[in-house]
Length: 103
Image: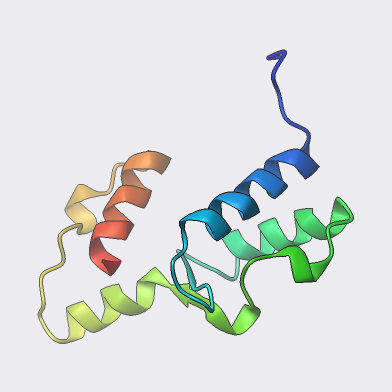
């Protein structure tokens, strides 16, 4: 293991601080594919670490699903920058593609 490994608590607090620092809008909206999985894991981890729900920088009603944008694009025949042919199943490449579709 790395000597600089963060505890789950510290990692979550850094993530939440990063979101607050770089989000220029209130309320904070978060995008995921799928929020019912990804964001639930983050919120559950925060609860297990004793982080109060008020410390999570977004509210449940401000969770957005990338698949909604992809579905609308498909229904309206609007080509998106990142399509199924581009999916690499590499986490960083996939998230960059999802950002390009939402932005």
